[in-house]
Image (cartoon, rainbow over all chains, first blue to last red; front, side):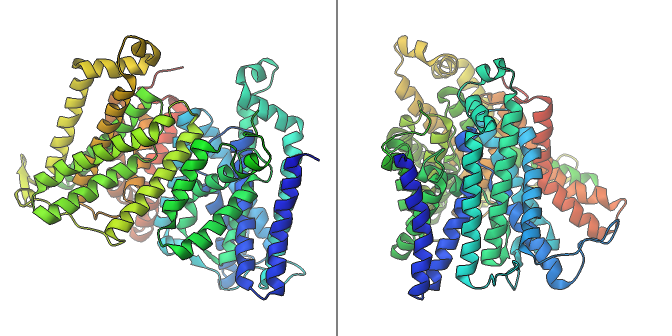
Length: 327
Length: 306
C-alpha cells in the first residue's frame, strides 16, 4: 500500500477513534466537534471533485451548502407546523425523515450547480472564480430578502430529523450517520477518480486541446463534475443544518465558500482524504486557538499564507513526501 | 412614481456606480498588468474607511481624513505587494485566491483588534451636509453629488494617466508584454508596486467616501469587492472603459431595481406580495444582468475576445 493510502486510513481511523474515546470519557462536546469535522469534510470532498480533479476554482460552493441546508430547513419547518409546502397542482407535505431530506437537498443543489455551471463554464480562469463568487452572493442576498423562511434571522428546527432505526438526538448515533455518509462518498469519489470519466476530467484539466482531439467534450466533462461536486456539498449542507438544528443566510456567505476551499488546500488539493485532514485541522485550530485568542483568524491567515507560499501540497502532500498530487 | 423621485434614484444609482468604479478600476488594472486576482482589495477599501474615520475623529477635518485614507491605503497596498503579492505573480489563480483570502483574514481581524468590533462613524463635512437644488427644482444631497463629481474626475484623470503619461505607456506595455518591457530596461517590479499602490489608493478613497454615508466597520469591503467582480465580468477584464460602463450599469440596475420592481409588480399584484417579490427579485437583478452578459458575450462587453 502507498504511503498516502496508509495516511488516509490513519486519518479516517482517527476521526472514528476520537468520538469513541469521547463517548467512554463522557465528553459529548468532543463528539459534536468530530461530527462537525465529518460534515465539513464532506463539503470539502464535494469541492475537491471540481477543484482538485477538474481544476475548477469555484469560490461559490457555499451556494450549494446553503441550498442543502435550506432544503432541510424548509421541509422540516413545514412538517413542524403541519402546513403543506403546496397543495396545488399536487399536495407536497413537509417531512422530518432524513433520507427524503437528503434526496431533496442533493437534487436541488445538483440542479443549482447545473444552472450555475452551465453559465460559469462558458468562461474559465479568473472569470470563473469571480462568477461563482458572484452567484454565491446572489443566493445570500436572496435568502435575506425573502421573508417566508425567516429572512435574515434564519429558521430554527426544534427536534433533529429522524432516521429509521436510530435516535439521531444521541450525539454518537448522529456522528455515526455522518461518518458513514462521509466514508461512502469517499469510496464513491475514489471510484470516480479512477473511472474513465475521472481520467478524462483529469486530462481535461491538464491539456484541454488533447482531450478535444480525441473526441471528448471538456465542457460536458466539467459540467458533470461541477454538478456532482455541488450535489455532495449540498448533502453536507443538509447534515450541517441538522447538526445545528438551525439554518440562516450565513450558510450562503462567501466566507464559507472560502473556508471550504481552505479545508481542501490545508489538507492537500486532489488528495482523496485531503478535505478530511484539512477540516480536522481547521476545527482543532478553531477550538484551541479560539480559546487562546479572540482574534484567532489572524493566526489562521498566517498559517494559510505559509501553506500557500511555502508548503504546497498541504498536510497529506507533506506527510506522503510528494509535494503536489498533480505530478 | 413621480419624475423627481425617479431622477433622484438615477443620481443615487450613478453615485453607487461611481463608487464601484473606484474599486473595479484598481482590480482590473492589477489584473490587466500583473495577471493577479486580488480578493484583499476589499480590505484596502476598509483600511481607507478606518483611516479616514480615525483621522476625522482626531482632527475634525474631512479633507485631511480623505488624504490620510489615500495615503494609508496606498501604503498598505505597497507593503502587502512587497511582502506577499509579488511572490504570487508567477503562481496559478488558485494560489492567488488563497493567499489573498488569507490576507483578508489578517486585515479584518487586525482591524478588529485595533479598533474593536463596534462600527465607527464618519460625518459628512459641514459644507456638504445640506441638499442642493438642481435645475428643475430637484433637491439632492450635496455630498452624494460631490461623490459623483469626484468619481467622474478621477475616471477622467485615470484615462489621461493611461493614455498620455509615461507611466500610462508603461502600464499599457505591461499589459501586452511584460518580458519585452523588462528587456527595454523598465524596472518591472517597481512598476508593479506602483500599479498596486495606485489601485489600493483608489479603493481606500472609495472606502473613505462611502464611510461617510454608511457606518465604518470590519467586513464592509467584501460585499463591495464582490460587486466590483460583477462589474469586471460585465465590462471585461483589464479594460478601464469596461469598468466604467460596467460600474454605471450595475449601479443603476441595482438602485433602480430596488425602487422600480416593487412598483412594477404592484401594477398586477396586491401591494404586500408586490413588495415581497419585487424586493427579492431586485436583490438578484445585477446577477441576472451578469448572467445575460455571459450568455451574449462571455468575455464581457469590452473584453478582448480569445
